Amino acid sequence: MQAPLINQTYAQLPAVLHALAELKPVAAPKLLIGNSTLAQHMGIDPSWLESDEAAQLLSGNQSAAHGSPLAMAYAGHQFGGFNPSLGDGRAMLLGDVVLADGTTRELHLKGSGRTQFSRGADGRATVSAMLREYIISEAMAALGVPTTRSLAVMATGERVWRQKPEQGAVLTRVAKSHVRVGTFQYLAARHDVETIRTLMNHEIARHMPGVTTAQDFLATAISRQAKLIAMWMSFGFIHGVMNTDNMQIAGETIDYGPCAFMDGFDPQKVFSSIDENGRYAFDKQPMIGLWNLTRLAECLLPVLDDDKTYAIKIAETELQNYMPQFEAAFEQRMLAKLGIDDLSQTDFIATTLQHMANARADFTLFFMGLTRGENVEKFFMSKLAHDEWDQQWNTLKSAKANELMKHHNPVYIARNHRVAEALAAAELGDLAPFHRLLNAVQSPFTEQQGFKDLEAAPLPQEEVLQTFCGT
Ligand code: AMP
Ligand code: MG
Image (cartoon, rainbow, N blue to C red; front, side, top):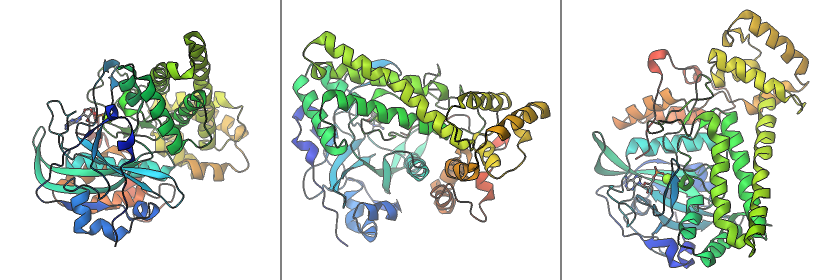
């Protein structure tokens, strides 16, 4: 039961990128949930997660043996407005571990107390927000969506004041890297070209094998983001707060705040309580992805070429590749959801989504209904609309439609109302509903006996209309 070997390689990067994070010990750290599968994958003994040493380390009460925790500096466009100095205000980087395959993963504690970037806030997080991140990120991972992972949630035994007193917790988040678009913006705002180059090379070395030039680096970041957002949308996922500080270079979904899987399909759907203008609505996500990547490209101009005009040309060329890549990935996934292997049938995606939007068809149940060969008429405005659509569908379906659909249409998603219900029970000390839901969403494509209620759409009175930033 050995502790993982944690190094602090980020400390070797120029000092402008990080600040020492002082430990802010909590009263009574206690493991609420640990991720054995992820621990094993990372070469960590799952039983270590239950040790006192893990409780001390993963609640921010103790440093890892090989280096002090750091708060990472970053900037960011928040809802379009630029803030040159955000940084980890309630998180700290413990360090990184090397996996058996030679790749590295960072361990980051969220809710670990104030840092020099906290501004007026308390640096803490609540049990319910951290459990919410845990279950949604693990659901995303099981769907095959690139994402930061959740290794453990430690209750702190302390109160956190939000609208009401809540229980505090610290989440151990695992990522290939926590460098964001906003990390590059932080340096660009300080005209620190040398560190931009260093940071770029750091990222390339960590997770972009084969990349050798700044142009390749930008192209890879663009391509990963295009595919990521296509995947989100193929599962009806809304990130909710796609600020540039919440978009990571490695292409993993990061920062699970007011995010949600949609129930009834509405392309303009927004859940976030703070997104008053619908900037991060479902169907705006591809465009916002491009906007954020354009901010990244601006930061990279001085390393793309010494000649500014030529650098801009390179950036524009690469940014122009974003939309076609997004569209190709989205279309391929949506056609697979419909059991169609003829990739030229893209008009049928639009037709289907229009019908779904008209009738506010449940995004997951509609595709599950098709997969199971059920009559899906109830998801259409009229029998006529259904019959016309169905006739067309039957002419387009592939001979291996069922295989395609089974692998692209989940039975279980982390539905908002079920997540809310599980979190409410957890707050009262009952983690059973949370474990049950986690169990379902960790094998999203496999139907399990006794989980029918977890498939169902919310009744009108159960519907969650707003989600909140995970503070
Ligand atoms: P987020 O909404 O999680 O992306 O956070 C945006 C910024 O606010 C980041 O710099 C966070 O570190 C900071 N922040 C959010 N919540 C807190 C908190 N409770 N205490 C300190 N800083 C916070
Ligand atoms: Mg953030």
